[in-house]
Image (cartoon, rainbow, N blue to C red; front, top):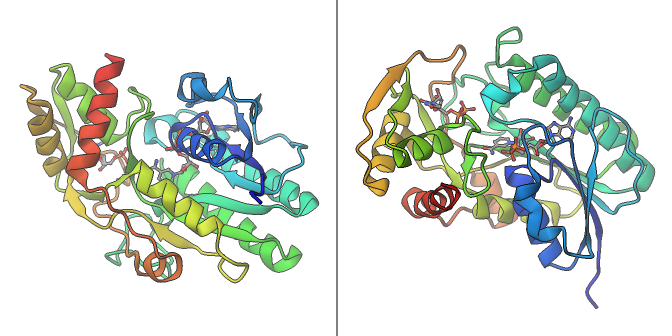
Length: 313
Ligand code: NAD
Ligand code: UDP
């Protein structure tokens, strides 16, 4: 018999949340999507609004929430530097108060709870590629700190609730992910470059473009979320989820220009402060414990994402 679970997704109208909601509803679960629409939009979940097993609640996770659920995916938090730096105090509150509220909910209901943590907990890493045992190199008082330290504190809360209250926790450290449903003005590099290339605008390369990132396509990541959530109680994470293929930002720009046949030129802009110089996940744990690894590589994922942004224009 198929077991229909009641699942809460916070940040469900955002980029990753909308893909997760769609997947969970498709599998026959009852999904409650909570979002304050700071960066997310109803458009991302418009086709789910017709589904009887999908429910949308406009709610800010920094306030308590009373719902009865079996599982919680806590994704609420702006992820793009320009958005999380817009109101840094609210960003920290979202990560920290949001975690406290969702952990309290998990404690009361006995729900298993997943945390969307981030590679930013490693800061500007001095260990490369990043392994889960690395404690990171994070500036506590810089412009990115509201996000990085907020997410680090959320991890602390998850592990303290696990030790103190025996909560079932699943902490994923997500590395740069891209795909359809990213907001066109989201400000992150993949959406920026594709939108600029499609519109013939200059491609804004921050710094000299030699900094690296490793890009994961969204469908692969959602498979990783599900695989982690389905593991037994002994696996808490933190576990890296991302695609280990590493590129310089300049290589990404050139690839986007090639795939869009764009005439856009590269222009350089100042490197934002504390912008990590390199980033690449070590995913040996995810391979061994979840049997998971990404299968969609950059070119294929970019083609799908370009198609999505073309459809918006
Ligand atoms: P996103 O900005 O598209 O989605 C975040 C969602 O959270 C939005 O719908 C936003 O409106 C909502 N939100 C923000 N503050 C809220 C609040 N106080 N209460 C309720 N809802 C709130 O970003 P995303 O890429 O989908 O990221 C989702 C999660 O994954 C975030 O927690 C982010 O930190 C994490 N993450 C993402 C990436 C990535 O590359 N996409 C990498 C690392 C971590
Ligand atoms: N970046 C860039 N041009 C842009 C946007 C971003 O060169 O228009 C760079 C940014 O400086 C960083 C990388 O691309 O080195 C990834 O930035 P993003 O904001 O997507 O995510 P981050 O990994 O820094 O959180």
